[in-house]
Image (cartoon, rainbow, N blue to C red):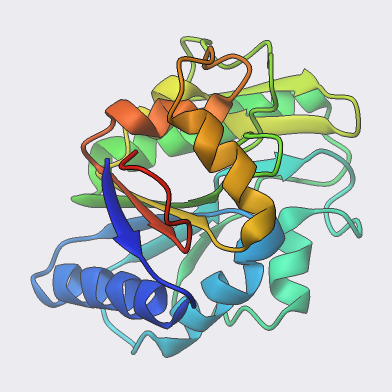
Length: 221
């Protein structure tokens, strides 16, 4: 994992915009998977800075909180509420009406497998929680080592649909954002031998495709 020290999101936005723009100018289709939480504003800035292009840009989610599409805690709905402009992009939201949890997960798994096989560039924008979770993979998450690209489980707060560790590893470019002192304890734990089941974000340590943007000045991760 590469590490870049930064104190704001401007560089992250520019790096993402440059990567996507360069790929599309070279006629290379792009898949961009977004996460919620603290990355929502950043994701909206990236999408809204992209210029129209005939080369496809597919946009979906790293993880979603299950429910009726449009529910208040949905990551996709929160992106839309924050001003995500979907004009000219191919969107792939997870939720669809009142389709059952397992079926919704299986459908999204099939969609992402097809997309990952068809695009030239696949990008994930992820964060790290204060408890060390990433994507929808909470500590001791039962689907982390699932053989599927996307799987589902019932967490302590939501029914969740998320990329698995293997699904994340399939991405060609992984942008990980961890800004603010509240994230530093989790980053310190990523430097230790604590089991990855306890600190799921430790998966990035061994991923050459991952770049961590952080204001944490600790040791090399």
